[in-house]
Amino acid sequence: AGPKLLVHVLFAKYGLHLPLNRQSDVYRREGIDLDVSTLADWVGASAATLMPLLDAIRSHVFAAERIHADD
Image (tube, rainbow, N blue to C red):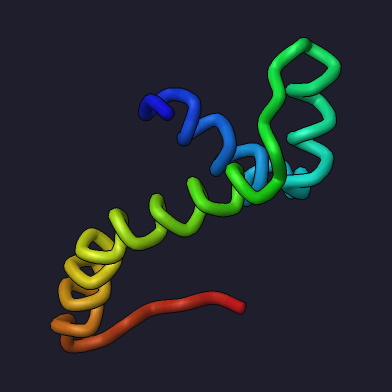
């Protein structure tokens, strides 16, 4: 899958709270057969790929003298 499709799947899952089974149904209605397990594999691979970015952000945030947060 290309980066644009991966971003679309990830945003739909996490930004729009659209479960992978419903995404699969949407694609199927459009004539694209994407199994839920394929989408889940892509989500897992994307998470692993983005882990170094998460680690860098975490290091940057925790290096601060104070961390300001809101509930």
